[in-house]
Image (tube, rainbow, N blue to C red):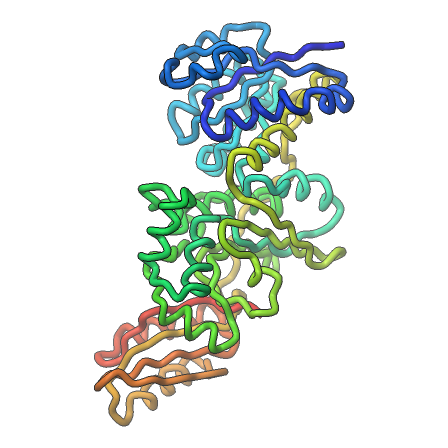
Length: 424
């Protein structure tokens, strides 16, 4: 029987969850791997704060204590952020320690660099928990879809914004009211910028697109829009049209090009993603052979995320036993070719205001005719001398959309409040 000792970088919500799950499931892990896992040392900022764990694990504020400990074979990085996490991981990999992380920001920005270092040093770098918390989506794509061609990955990958949008629809709350409630319940940080602007979801879509299409994107390659400008008017109008608004990440293979975008999207009431509410996440994978498959679960939280971390730990433990360390988590690599804007086609929802006088709708109709676009549904309400107009267009390309938005922006009387994709 082999005993494998681990180090933890961070002992917060997820770190303590990892410690708890190893202790509770030690016999099952042994039956599967043939190894006993023990967390030997945990790196913390303040030892006094974590004294309740002192009887279970050695606490330290010195990273080098873990780095130089030859007994520690696997290190779990859970401090988050770019630095010092990146420096720590590089040093660990160069010292031939295996690293498991849940750090989506770092993997999205520097994943290929870190994986190359791991491979060069015959070590492993695993990061299942970096996307969608407790949903085992990355390993599923890497292993179960290896012989199929994935054409699209889309989903709800941020629990904070999904909670906000759910409450806006179900309770009739404003965006600010829903955000305040999310913060009160702990679903949103005190500074929720990365969540509400779509940046958090964009990082996750970068990682998902790498696994689905083999492409390495930067944040500049992703069109990103958040929910911070969403109004209750749009939520109500979408519902009347038969849709619910969700912050979706979409990564799509179009011909030979890849299109990745994050933003509010109108989802039909009968679509599986429309029923994913509150802090839950869901990822839909579309492939040529199997069609649509949906993966649903908790996208955050201590134990759900810790479960994904433990999945990685058991995988690398087997690698240690078999002597197969040094293989990349994801070996699929393809050059990134942006999709042609003329080939990216969706229906769109527009929310506009204009003076309630004759001729305004005619001007809007002419603008749409000029770019060969048309109305599918339209509704108009009055507020004094102002008309509020909500439209669902027929399918139009990204190129047509850009041309239409330019025309509307140049109009002295027609103002665009929102423009969101609509999926079927």
